[in-house]
Amino acid sequence: MLELKNISYEVEDDHEILKNISLKIDKGFTAITGPNGSGKSTLAKIIAGIVKPTSGTIILDGEDITNLSITDRANKGISFAFQQPVRFKGLTVKDLITFAAGKDTSVSEACNILSEVGLCARDYIDREINASLSGGELKRIEIAIAIARGTKVSIFDEPEAGIDIWSFGSLIDVFESMHRKINGTIVVISHQEKLLKTADRIIVLADGKVSDDGPKDIIFDKWFCENSSVKCAKLENGGDR
Amino acid sequence: MDEITKKILKEVADLHEIPTGAYNIRKDGASIGRASSANINIVPKEDKSGIDIFIAPGTKNESVHIPVIISESGLKDVVYNDFYVGENADVLIVAGCGIHNCGDQESSHVGIHSFHLDKNAKVKYVEKHYGEADGRGTNVMDPTTNFDLKEGAYLEMETTQIKGIDSTNRITNGTLSDDATLIIHEKLLTHEEQYARTEFNVDLNGKNSSANVASRSVAKGKSKQEFVSCINGNAECSGHSECDAIIMDEAVVTAVPKLIASNVEASLIHEAAIGKIAGEQIIKLMTLGLSEQEAEEQIVNGFLK
Image (cartoon, rainbow over all chains, first blue to last red; front, side, top):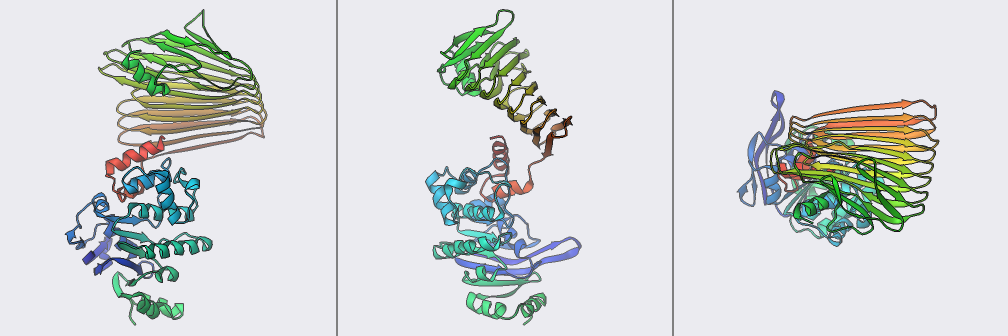
């Protein structure tokens, strides 16, 4: 289980991005949503160790990992898929899948992983992770790399960002498939209603605080089944319903 | 063949034994093995050190290996190798030089290679430079490569210097006729106090001739690199040069591009990028479980792959 205790994060001029957040995230598929600037991505990066919280504690399966490095957290079983996948000159899809798996990966193993995200291994295995790949391809490869790690906690930061309307459908398929095969904790940061619907639990962040938290059906109906202007107004008011 | 020779041959020419086909192995200033084939004739020069390699017109799927090994500390080896590649031939040429310097003196190799490609000849030329030292001796390599590409000729050069060369001044000159193509990929890594200068001069004289010169380099420690390229577009032609360098520690990288178009139909492009490893690249690999140092190594290895 992943537990966040009283996590706060301040930047210059005492501006608080996250305000005393406490959450317990168990096995299953959890979505974190909320308006831009609510602190979702910052929270995800704090879990992965990329951003250090100003205060608070992070517990993974009973162990305090607050002061562990990114590498140590990765080796404890936390994966993080970037909102903007990083490009590398020279490193190939197979290289990154091999790093992710922590062992040399055979072509057939890489093929299985890439097919999970709807990519044909033969076309992608030796491709450099550079500007020659489209945003949609990079996103799917980023997800495939997280799958290759097979860790107990996988965090996806806005997997839909930069995806065109045609690729979005297959992205939903990928997450629905992951949900069916789930064997650990998946946390998805998202604005997309279709993606949120694949979750078991939805946490709503607004103005750096947990505004709502509960089973998908209840939270989704409460926040997303009205017209968008009402929804935005509610979120902008810090979740005041 | 002793162990040092075997190791150097593996490093510079990927050879584990005497190659098949035509070859000339030069060690410490003299040939220690040579063979011609039915279509490729290797003849020692009479007026100076080196060989002439004659590749018959129409020769296909054959290779020539001409590695150089220097194991004598303090040796200054100068060699002239001329390749005459006949019409419509299609061959692989593997050169390269490795220095094992076990003393305190400077060992150097100056290889002057001239390629004369006849009409529609096609060559892949692979060249690797490598050095190792047990003592305080320095390893110097100053190769000059000249390409003369006749109508429709095609030459692709892969040149690599990854380890152990303290100083290099590499000069590559190309002259292209109609429809000729020259492609050069350079990979370079310098570290500690090493110095590497690369100079490319390409004359695109023929209609529809094209050149693509790309250099990827990593400069570590206090090493210094200089990339100088000059493409002259003298006809309806296309030229592209690219310098992409990762700079680390206290290294210095200089890129000096020069394009001269003297024909209105010449299309010439230069791209240069010098910068450190992006922090987000290191973070990404750390999220996969690599340490910061391992991430840096893998990024460099991939960049120079």
